[in-house]
Image 1 (cartoon, protein in one colour):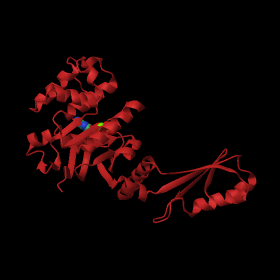
Image 2 (image 1 turned 180 degrees about the vertical axis):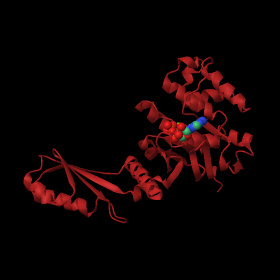
Image 3 (image 1 turned 180 degrees about the horizontal axis):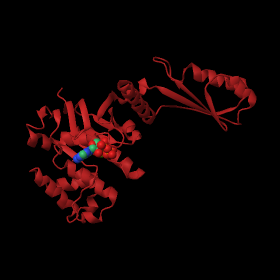
Image 4 (image 1 turned 45 degrees about the vertical axis):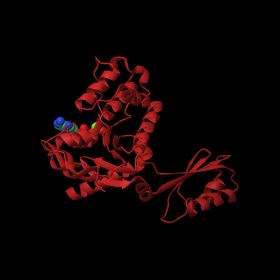
Length: 318
Ligand SMILES: Nc1ncnc2c1ncn2[C@@H]1O[C@H](COP(=O)(O)OP(=O)(O)OP(=O)(O)O)[C@@H](O)[C@H]1O
Ligand SMILES: [Mg+2]
């Protein structure tokens, strides 16, 4: 199948700085792709090159198989962008903003179609309100409606939930899932690792313009398969219990014990180490109240990948 977005050796320089540095990537139809990286990593620049806001780059960018430089007008129409910085038109009503946006792309939605979109984003009752009087979260939702007016094939959300409260964040995540269910391909950038972990099918990790890794979320989780188990005891472990645990790398905090371990490929969830821990505790006379397991967060994976990259570049430099 043809990629929705294809980058080949994309480089964008600002003077000496390579804001995007030799990035190659395919984004497949219907997927949610998260671009994860720290401030200044090059996420917004990369999106700008694909959506036609940034020109003068090296390498090739294609949307639905068409080169974005040679076929600017067509490719621009296939993408929707919700920018990181909200730029709303302060003198118009919500409905007018959407009508103007549609006009810009030469589409003529009916009043009912606009109402339906507004309704999906819980903005219908604000349809005739001046955009100046919308709350921050409403403005962000309006920006998404705006980006959807011409029914793009691929929607770019640049930090969709920055500065958004938990409730609206969950709502936005719901919208993103619903859009994908409709067949829209979605590329989002985020600092919120939880967001990438929750929404994305694949995650790209970018730092200093370089795309360090691209992986299925699950594959990333497998590779960095750190697990932990937390055991709550009825009483703080006695010296006897601690002694019985011996060499095992168990962190003790009050009545809670935490064991970090690596799940080996093919091994059952839980693993021998956890069995051993529980048996040892019971054997030493401790009463176990609860056992809870978990896996490494994307956050710790991210730290590790950036760390590997720093190691690699310092080795390269020496
Ligand atoms: N127009 C410009 N002129 C010069 N440098 C720029 C320009 N735009 C971006 N940069 C630089 O390019 C690098 C990448 O910036 P970019 O905005 O793409 O990062 P980002 O990953 O989106 O960061 P954030 O998470 O903070 O939004 C930064 O060092 C930035 O200062
Ligand atoms: Mg940015």
